[in-house]
Image (cartoon, rainbow over all chains, first blue to last red; front, side, top):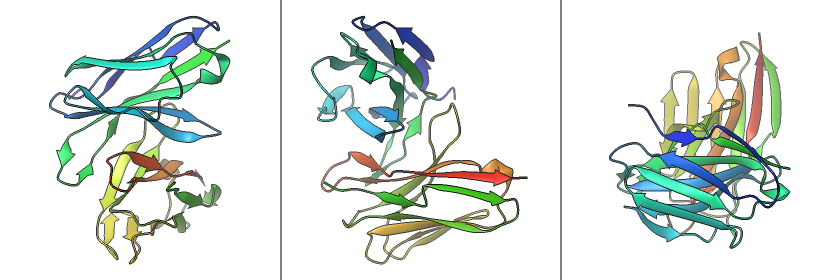
Length: 115
Length: 111
Protein backbone atom coordinates (compact mmCIF):
# COMPACT_ATOMS: atom_id res chain seq x y z
CA UNK A 1 0.00 0.00 0.00
CA UNK A 2 1.30 3.48 -0.88
CA UNK A 3 0.24 5.06 2.38
CA UNK A 4 -1.19 8.56 2.69
CA UNK A 5 0.01 10.79 -0.13
CA UNK A 6 0.33 14.54 0.24
CA UNK A 7 1.29 17.16 -2.30
CA UNK A 8 3.16 19.35 -2.62
CA UNK A 9 5.86 18.41 -0.10
CA UNK A 10 7.07 21.99 0.07
CA UNK A 11 5.27 25.20 -0.78
CA UNK A 12 6.67 28.72 -0.65
CA UNK A 13 4.27 31.52 -1.37
CA UNK A 14 3.83 35.22 -0.81
CA UNK A 15 1.41 36.70 1.65
CA UNK A 16 -2.03 37.13 0.14
CA UNK A 17 -1.76 34.24 -2.28
CA UNK A 18 -4.08 31.25 -2.30
CA UNK A 19 -2.56 27.94 -1.22
CA UNK A 20 -4.07 24.50 -1.84
CA UNK A 21 -2.76 21.41 -0.11
CA UNK A 22 -3.77 17.97 -1.35
CA UNK A 23 -4.21 14.58 0.27
CA UNK A 24 -4.95 11.08 -0.94
CA UNK A 25 -5.91 8.82 2.00
CA UNK A 26 -5.35 5.10 2.26
CA UNK A 27 -8.03 3.22 0.36
CA UNK A 28 -10.77 1.87 2.62
CA UNK A 29 -10.16 4.28 5.49
CA UNK A 30 -13.35 5.95 6.72
CA UNK A 31 -11.79 8.96 8.44
CA UNK A 32 -9.55 11.75 7.24
CA UNK A 33 -7.86 14.32 9.46
CA UNK A 34 -5.99 17.56 8.73
CA UNK A 35 -3.40 18.70 11.29
CA UNK A 36 -1.00 21.61 11.57
CA UNK A 37 2.34 21.35 13.39
CA UNK A 38 4.46 24.24 14.65
CA UNK A 39 7.20 24.45 17.23
CA UNK A 40 5.13 26.79 19.37
CA UNK A 41 1.79 24.98 19.30
CA UNK A 42 2.72 21.40 18.51
CA UNK A 43 0.34 19.20 16.51
CA UNK A 44 -3.18 20.62 16.26
CA UNK A 45 -6.25 19.07 14.68
CA UNK A 46 -7.87 21.42 12.17
CA UNK A 47 -10.76 19.36 10.79
CA UNK A 48 -11.81 15.77 10.30
CA UNK A 49 -14.13 13.94 7.91
CA UNK A 50 -16.09 10.71 8.18
CA UNK A 51 -17.12 9.13 4.89
CA UNK A 52 -16.34 12.41 3.08
CA UNK A 53 -18.54 14.48 5.43
CA UNK A 54 -16.93 17.14 7.66
CA UNK A 55 -17.64 16.21 11.29
CA UNK A 56 -15.75 18.82 13.29
CA UNK A 57 -14.04 21.93 11.96
CA UNK A 58 -13.69 23.73 15.28
CA UNK A 59 -9.91 23.64 14.94
CA UNK A 60 -9.87 25.64 11.72
CA UNK A 61 -8.23 28.89 12.80
CA UNK A 62 -10.36 31.29 10.80
CA UNK A 63 -12.46 31.74 7.70
CA UNK A 64 -9.38 31.92 5.52
CA UNK A 65 -9.09 28.16 5.92
CA UNK A 66 -11.41 25.72 4.17
CA UNK A 67 -11.31 21.98 3.55
CA UNK A 68 -13.19 19.71 1.19
CA UNK A 69 -13.43 16.01 0.54
CA UNK A 70 -15.26 15.54 -2.77
CA UNK A 71 -14.74 11.77 -2.77
CA UNK A 72 -13.22 8.99 -0.69
CA UNK A 73 -9.82 9.28 -2.33
CA UNK A 74 -9.13 13.02 -2.28
CA UNK A 75 -9.17 15.97 0.08
CA UNK A 76 -7.93 19.55 -0.09
CA UNK A 77 -7.06 22.18 2.48
CA UNK A 78 -7.16 25.71 1.11
CA UNK A 79 -5.86 28.92 2.64
CA UNK A 80 -7.03 32.15 1.03
CA UNK A 81 -5.47 34.62 1.53
CA UNK A 82 -2.35 33.20 3.14
CA UNK A 83 -0.46 35.02 5.90
CA UNK A 84 3.07 34.54 7.32
CA UNK A 85 1.61 33.10 10.55
CA UNK A 86 0.19 30.21 8.49
CA UNK A 87 3.74 28.92 7.98
CA UNK A 88 3.80 25.38 9.39
CA UNK A 89 3.87 21.73 8.43
CA UNK A 90 0.43 20.48 7.47
CA UNK A 91 -0.32 16.79 7.84
CA UNK A 92 -3.13 14.69 6.50
CA UNK A 93 -3.94 11.41 8.23
CA UNK A 94 -6.45 8.68 7.50
CA UNK A 95 -7.85 6.00 9.74
CA UNK A 96 -10.10 3.01 9.75
CA UNK A 97 -12.47 2.86 12.70
CA UNK A 98 -11.47 0.12 15.16
CA UNK A 99 -14.38 0.01 17.58
CA UNK A 100 -13.57 2.78 20.03
CA UNK A 101 -10.23 4.04 18.79
CA UNK A 102 -8.57 5.27 15.65
CA UNK A 103 -5.27 4.18 14.16
CA UNK A 104 -4.17 7.27 12.35
CA UNK A 105 -1.77 6.89 9.42
CA UNK A 106 -0.05 10.16 8.67
CA UNK A 107 1.24 11.42 5.36
CA UNK A 108 4.72 12.95 5.02
CA UNK A 109 3.36 16.49 5.40
CA UNK A 110 3.49 19.70 3.40
CA UNK A 111 5.91 22.32 4.67
CA UNK A 112 4.31 25.70 3.96
CA UNK A 113 6.29 28.92 4.08
CA UNK A 114 4.45 32.20 3.59
CA UNK A 115 6.74 35.19 3.07
CA UNK B 1 -9.75 21.99 28.01
CA UNK B 2 -7.97 18.67 28.17
CA UNK B 3 -4.20 18.89 27.94
CA UNK B 4 -1.46 16.29 27.68
CA UNK B 5 1.84 17.37 29.20
CA UNK B 6 4.93 15.37 28.31
CA UNK B 7 8.22 15.25 30.16
CA UNK B 8 11.02 15.66 29.74
CA UNK B 9 10.81 18.02 26.79
CA UNK B 10 14.30 17.07 25.57
CA UNK B 11 16.44 14.04 26.34
CA UNK B 12 19.91 13.21 25.08
CA UNK B 13 21.42 9.88 26.13
CA UNK B 14 24.13 7.44 25.16
CA UNK B 15 23.43 4.24 23.27
CA UNK B 16 22.63 1.39 25.64
CA UNK B 17 21.06 3.52 28.37
CA UNK B 18 17.50 3.11 29.60
CA UNK B 19 14.98 5.94 29.70
CA UNK B 20 11.40 6.74 30.60
CA UNK B 21 9.23 9.51 29.21
CA UNK B 22 5.92 10.57 30.67
CA UNK B 23 2.56 11.80 29.47
CA UNK B 24 0.33 13.39 32.10
CA UNK B 25 -3.09 14.96 32.28
CA UNK B 26 -5.52 16.13 34.93
CA UNK B 27 -8.31 14.58 32.85
CA UNK B 28 -9.34 10.99 32.28
CA UNK B 29 -8.83 9.59 28.80
CA UNK B 30 -10.66 6.59 27.37
CA UNK B 31 -7.44 5.57 25.63
CA UNK B 32 -3.99 6.92 24.91
CA UNK B 33 -1.68 6.42 21.98
CA UNK B 34 2.05 6.86 21.48
CA UNK B 35 3.58 8.00 18.20
CA UNK B 36 7.16 8.47 17.03
CA UNK B 37 8.00 11.15 14.50
CA UNK B 38 11.29 11.36 12.64
CA UNK B 39 12.52 14.55 10.96
CA UNK B 40 10.70 15.32 7.72
CA UNK B 41 8.09 12.62 8.25
CA UNK B 42 4.66 12.24 9.77
CA UNK B 43 4.07 10.60 13.17
CA UNK B 44 3.89 6.81 13.20
CA UNK B 45 1.59 5.03 15.63
CA UNK B 46 3.45 2.76 18.06
CA UNK B 47 0.73 1.59 20.42
CA UNK B 48 -2.77 2.19 21.79
CA UNK B 49 -3.57 1.51 25.45
CA UNK B 50 -7.20 1.38 26.51
CA UNK B 51 -7.44 -0.20 29.97
CA UNK B 52 -6.27 1.41 33.22
CA UNK B 53 -3.09 -0.32 34.38
CA UNK B 54 -2.47 -1.88 30.98
CA UNK B 55 1.10 -2.66 29.99
CA UNK B 56 2.12 -3.31 26.40
CA UNK B 57 5.53 -4.24 25.06
CA UNK B 58 6.93 -3.60 21.63
CA UNK B 59 10.42 -5.11 21.49
CA UNK B 60 12.52 -2.81 23.72
CA UNK B 61 9.65 -0.38 24.32
CA UNK B 62 7.27 -0.79 27.26
CA UNK B 63 4.10 1.31 27.47
CA UNK B 64 1.96 1.67 30.57
CA UNK B 65 -1.44 3.30 31.06
CA UNK B 66 -2.04 4.66 34.55
CA UNK B 67 -4.65 3.02 36.74
CA UNK B 68 -6.76 6.19 36.73
CA UNK B 69 -6.29 6.61 32.95
CA UNK B 70 -4.85 10.09 33.41
CA UNK B 71 -1.25 9.31 32.54
CA UNK B 72 1.01 7.03 30.56
CA UNK B 73 4.69 6.21 30.36
CA UNK B 74 7.05 4.89 27.71
CA UNK B 75 10.17 3.04 28.84
CA UNK B 76 12.94 2.22 26.38
CA UNK B 77 15.51 -0.39 27.33
CA UNK B 78 19.01 -0.24 25.85
CA UNK B 79 18.31 2.73 23.61
CA UNK B 80 19.71 2.71 20.10
CA UNK B 81 20.38 5.58 17.67
CA UNK B 82 17.39 4.39 15.65
CA UNK B 83 15.16 5.35 18.59
CA UNK B 84 15.97 9.02 17.99
CA UNK B 85 12.89 11.08 17.26
CA UNK B 86 9.97 13.04 18.66
CA UNK B 87 7.69 10.95 20.87
CA UNK B 88 4.09 12.11 21.08
CA UNK B 89 1.24 10.87 23.19
CA UNK B 90 -2.34 11.45 22.05
CA UNK B 91 -5.82 10.81 23.29
CA UNK B 92 -9.42 11.55 22.31
CA UNK B 93 -11.04 14.60 23.87
CA UNK B 94 -13.87 13.59 26.18
CA UNK B 95 -16.97 12.50 24.34
CA UNK B 96 -15.40 13.01 20.92
CA UNK B 97 -13.09 11.38 18.43
CA UNK B 98 -10.92 14.51 18.22
CA UNK B 99 -7.40 13.53 19.16
CA UNK B 100 -5.35 15.85 21.37
CA UNK B 101 -1.59 15.51 21.02
CA UNK B 102 0.87 16.05 23.82
CA UNK B 103 3.69 18.56 23.87
CA UNK B 104 6.23 15.91 22.84
CA UNK B 105 9.57 14.57 24.04
CA UNK B 106 12.46 15.01 21.67
CA UNK B 107 14.88 12.08 22.17
CA UNK B 108 18.39 11.88 20.81
CA UNK B 109 20.41 8.68 21.25
CA UNK B 110 24.12 9.13 20.69
CA UNK B 111 26.22 6.29 19.27
